[in-house]
Image (cartoon, rainbow, N blue to C red; front, side, top):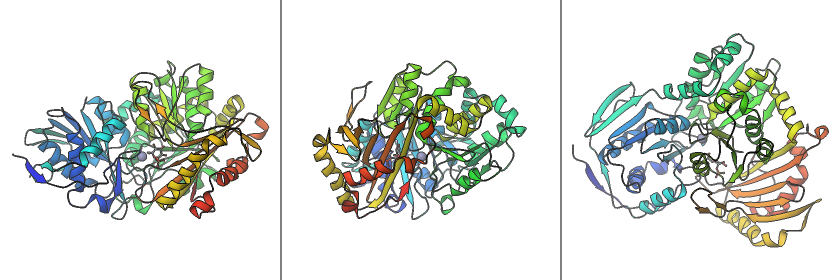
Length: 544
Ligand code: G1P
Ligand code: ZN
């Protein structure tokens, strides 16, 4: 079978963002669009001939068609073996695991994460490298550069592959394995957590869980792990069927989009643990009976209690958090006398730290938590970690949280998002603030004082690479922080994210609603950045 060389011209907008290339389905379906980007990935990765590529996606609209195109292009580009999830499904963490397990050259994951799906929704494509993690900036930059110069791509003319059954195929010189997307991942989870203990409690109703898969990729994973292997009663996993439009909902595990779960968890007779994951299975939201655990607190609590869980019983090497994530994890790291790293937003910045063995756990405020077991954040892993803790600690989530705050103080935290802003004014807002940073230090802000005002820049401690303009950071003398940055995952306009945080050591003051506890700071941030006059918005569109 001889590859066909197809002439093409570049698209100017194929620059990967915080997490791969994310575009509307309409954009991606333009003739040559997907093909150009995939060929740019291959061209930017010399040395792939004969090697293995892992392919799968979150099941969203256009997943199937895109996989067929990628398979034929990978074969035409000389890959030796393709490992593909049945029905084209692979959660992001499962794909990361498979890349590592098969010592693959890399993997292509089709997902726009928590963005809505369907013909009018979004599509996305991420390239992960051989360590199983998202391509670092030097690789995404090379892919982008290639996409702007591309003149042709390689394609094999062959019928579509049957992805419905577990099988081995051949396409030209390339071997193709269609594998069970769940099995290997489930085994990995069994190697980390105390399944026996959890099974004992879940199957006898001494512990109960409700997991909302949001009609996205974690459905089959959660059914296998939570109901089949851990023996939780049927119905513990909800919205488990993977639908191309996620049932018309937004597969984003937060208090807005998982409302039914939230209602269940705040009602009488609520289960012990409530959890949800996103489109591609890398995010998690954790709720206890009548309480919500912020992702920043979740990271800190998992770190503080990690020694209770088999996979982490030997202790943690270090912790990393993205810059806007609250400082709760830093306090735990200090108590454990292990290092804590602060990285820019985006999971790709954890890769080097994990590979070098500097950290064991890492997390982001945006519902992402993970460890060195893969190189992506991992939604179900976090849920199983919590379940394991509950099975061992025999206390409700709310009590575990309260005790944590009592020991370390509470980091009140909230994120205010202003979505769908026009790009220009949003950029101007940031520019203005950037220009004023130096003059802000030492100034009063409401009844606080500004200690440092800067724009976060990062030098990777492992390879020395630099990333600048990673968010404006206003640090207050009382330890509080205001952070502003523009989202790098949107497909239209701009989203301004404002992160607010303040530390409360006094137990008697720790039980307030974060919006009330942070009310002053929220107002101060709004006026400092002139958000209303710049954007015309009085209030944020999403508060988490
Ligand atoms: C968002 C989150 C970030 C996360 C990314 C991918 O990026 O804020 O923490 O890594 O999604 O899931 P943003 O839109 O803020 O650039
Ligand atoms: Zn995701």
